[in-house]
Structures are given as structure tokens and as C-alpha cells.
Length: 280
Picture 1 (cartoon, helix red, strand yellow):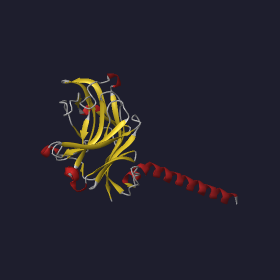
Picture 2: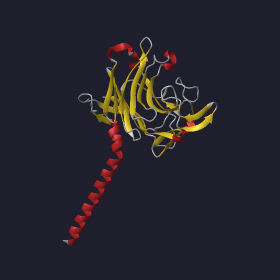
Picture 3: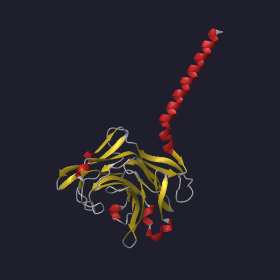
């Protein structure tokens, strides 16, 4: 009887250990599982959506350096159309502990007093419609301008704003407003956008859901703006074509102004992941 009880207890211990290992494995895979299929996004502007999404591309920044199969580094310091003060260079981007760090520095290169990073998926990963999101922690300081955005892939042939631009997240200076905006051409530059308030120094998930009818902006799953592109309304045909993704951290510029708080430098924008989903 004692031998039977001991054997039974050993059997239970083996079952418990096996269950624990299975649960641990499930926990480790839960983020990827969640990423591969998301059903329903809470819509705080009225009801809820019921779209099922499938992950089609991502960069989880799990390696030791930026994956150049995914990203291009744009370089230079000519103001980038906004009279920005930084020189963009690849060396300011690092990857460690599952995070991409985009760092702005007080550092002179050529005629620029600052350096930073601008990286794109142009020509490597371009998308039409879907859900595009990233988990990001932004730096806050006078003159800093972090952004997660997209441009039309035909920009080289048609120029801006005819290519279209979708700003998923922009922030300037020290306030708590996050900006989501589209820019396009309708006999000249026009735009549609809105803001939402946020605890700016925390990690947040910034996303857009984009289909043939509209583009919708979300902060941590809560919708705060929507722009109709149905049937090319208001000459929005730009938004029915492929776009590529951009991550950058500007220093100065027409929008944040040219007053830079050097005490906040170096400053880093932390990117946990970038993911693109398609509706199924």
C-alpha cells in the first residue's frame, strides 16, 4: 500500500511538473500568439470594431543590431524640409534587450550641431491597408520631435504631398499631446488630424487601422480620430496605394521651434516592436 501511494504521488508530481512546463511555454509564446491574431478593437468614439487581424510582418528587435533587411538608414542634415537641426546617421541606432534605441545627441557633424536617426522600410516592406502599430516610449524635451509615421511608396515619382503621409504618432517639446494626422494633395497641401492626451514618458501602443473606407487612430486601443477616404473623398486617392514605415527623432524644426534644451540630451526613443497586420 505504501509503495502504491508513493508511486501515485510520484505520478502526480510528474503531471504537475509537466503542466507547469506547458503553462510556462504558453506564457512565453503568448505575446506572439496575441500578435498573430487580434479580434476586436475597442472604439471609444462609438461602439467597437470586429476585425480579425493576422500578423504579416514585424520587427521585434530581438537581435544585437538593426536588421537591414527590414530598415534603411537615411543620412544627411539639410533640414529635411522642416529646418531641422540634426544630422541623421546610422550609428545613433542601437538594439539591446529586445529594444531599438533611437538616440539624439549634442554632437557636431558637418554643419549640424546635433545627430539622430531616421530609418525607413522603403523598398523593403510596403503595405496597403491593415493595422500598423508600435510600442514606443518617447523622450520629452524642448526641441525634441519623435515620430512613427508612413509615406506613400511613390514619393520619388510624384513628390510630397501627392504621395500621401500618415502620421501615426508625433510629439513635440514638453506637453502631453500626441498627434495623429494625414497629409495629402487636394489642389495643394491639406491635412486632417487630432490629438489625444497621454502620459508621455510611459510606453504606449500607437496604431492606425486603415482600410478602403477610413483611417482610424488609436492610443493603447482607444480610438481618438478617424478620417474618411471612401471613394477617394476629398481627393484622397493617395491612401489606396502602398506606404512604407518611418521611425525618427528630429531635433528642432519649424513645428517644435529652434530652441533646444541641451540638458535633455542625449535622449532616446525606445521602440519595443513594429507590427503590421492584415484583416482576415
